[in-house]
Image (cartoon, rainbow, N blue to C red; front, side):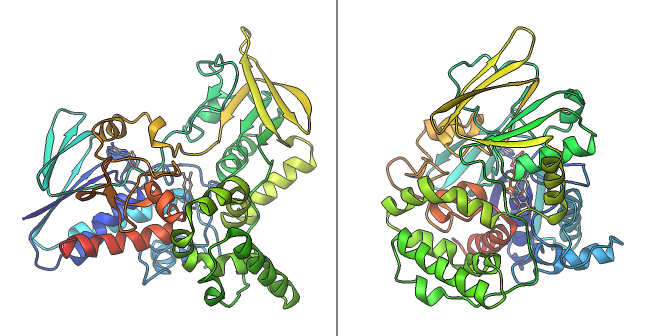
Length: 453
Ligand SMILES: Cc1cc2nc3c(=O)[nH]c(=O)nc-3n(C[C@H](O)[C@H](O)[C@H](O)COP(=O)(O)OP(=O)(O)OC[C@H]3O[C@@H](n4cnc5c(N)ncnc54)[C@H](O)[C@@H]3O)c2cc1C
């Protein structure tokens, strides 16, 4: 019997298990899925219980399967949720969808497939010839032929600051997704938020719905907010023009030309960006490393705000708070976050040669998941790196691996036993975090594992 262990049962690990079960045929198969019970199917992304934390992709495009992207929208209707195809449904409901899909798949599985969900945490992996042994926090040990690391999003790094006094302060929140965040912040608190991306938008909407009265100050290097979605436009693919381009500046010129053409033809720049989506992984893989570095340093922030957009409902809340001057956005270089004895923070940042001080009652870290695995605190990651079974990719954006997810060890050997999927492949594939990429990866990886890959 083939044994496959999946570490992490968020959206990615759960979808991989679903695909393995679906495609197993008559093959004898044992799947061990390691995840905390309450997190199963939800992971970090879909664990929120707040209905105003919305998906950032329209319902009709969030289906769990690459060949049926409308599946989620149909499920909503069948489950008596009333959302139009272009609506942005609550992420809570998406977690419910994945959990139900998993239960349904288990009910329909063949007797040849055994599935164990282990309410546990993997802390270590050893590889012996062509098999692996996984140590679990409970003390149990799993023996398996393959290990798939689907560990997703890690807690963010602390912001760089001269003083580290803020780290243990009562009102510094490293985890912006903690369920009790708004309970811990007084309504009149002035709040400083580091990072102005989608997580920032989540936190601001939470404060808004909690009738927050204090000032909210969002801060990032460029002070860019994610763009808002504008649906209903399309743009033809121009992938042929991009294939031979291996310089970021050439790619940028081509994309800008198409954005102008879209404007002139009554389309929208967002449709141009979306038309690139099927090619982005391929383009990334053909870029020479200095070009990738150039992109990361100079353009990735602009790409992120153009590509990962806000639902209009969320955007309206940010606008309303900005218009009322309750929400302000700053940019520059963060110098210091000093926590005083009174529990208040003094934040110092500089922009255009001017240094500014800001006083806040609470500070929230919305920098985003730690991607440099050398700094990830998970015992499993620390042990895997320590043994040299995995290493970071050269851009320190995730795990070094072949594009199909087979990890590469410290000696450059491609592993047949340890694989990874999802966010950890960001350095290898660049776009590897959202559902459209993840559902395709889960499907492809399942087929490859079942066919001996
Ligand atoms: C707040 C947020 C909102 C998002 N919204 C959207 C959206 O609207 N649309 C979209 O397409 N994408 C969205 N994304 C992107 C998101 O990354 C993917 O959609 C997807 O949810 C990723 O799932 P995942 O399982 O890879 O990661 P995660 O959701 O981070 O889950 C990983 C899981 O692995 C578990 N794990 C890690 N290490 C271990 C271990 N050692 N042992 C056992 N378990 C372990 C964790 O407990 C966790 O539950 C969002 C991401 C975030 C963070």
